[in-house]
Length: 122
View 1 (cartoon, one colour):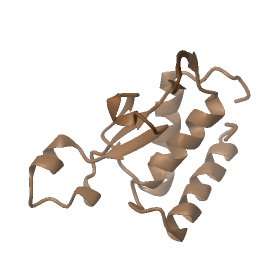
View 2 (cartoon, one colour):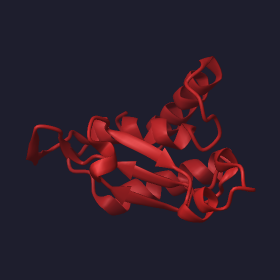
View 3 (cartoon, rainbow, N blue to C red):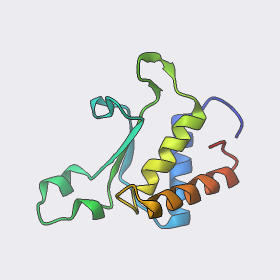
View 4 (spheres, helix red, strand yellow):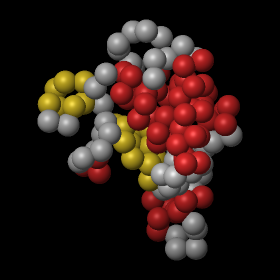
């Protein structure tokens, strides 16, 4: 997909294909929020897991992925599709690897490579 326009449905389609390929699950993908004050994306456990002290937040199967769609200081200017997809790959990697170590980096690259195989520029 070489188009510079990345539609919201495209992000869900890509995320669903990545999850099917790697055996991942998420609850939903949400657009930018105040939680993304300085970041392009975030991956948070669902409210139910945060509220339930007995559930390990890292193992929440309904994590919410937040993605920034617009430039931080220019809210009317969209980020490039490539940047959004790179952020999506990063946040999807958090569904398996919570931290930012070598295993995380390798898994993020696997996801990015799969996205390229699907025809997306990452």
